[in-house]
Length: 143
Figure (cartoon, rainbow, N blue to C red):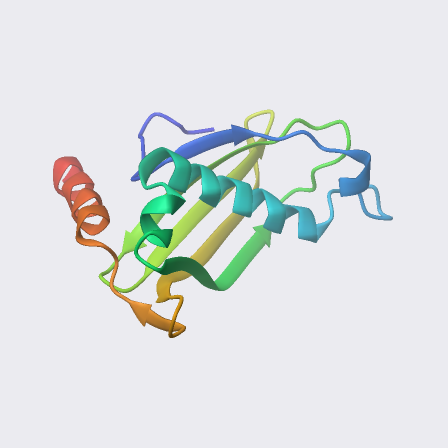
């Protein structure tokens, strides 16, 4: 697992595979990855921009697309580790990227596209300036 370079808004989590995570073929069910991605995104928010910051402004982080590539299965005896970061950010959209590993071997990649929505109207709104400028500062510092 290549973890030397810290990516923008990166978080890392270890997961435990539970018996209820396993499908009839003995591997982690596809729906479990969606739950794990949610855990990762919420950890990004807790770490870098708490959800309360959005909610106090009447905004809700919203997903519009999820793509997952399953490279190797994860089973009941595995101890997966995952990392997520913001791969791209524009004034209106964020792209979250994630990688799952088992014993240092890449098992799964995922990409989620999101935006902010004003809860009263359901319409997309720009990313708050302080969050957007933090992303731009990271990009400037790494170039």
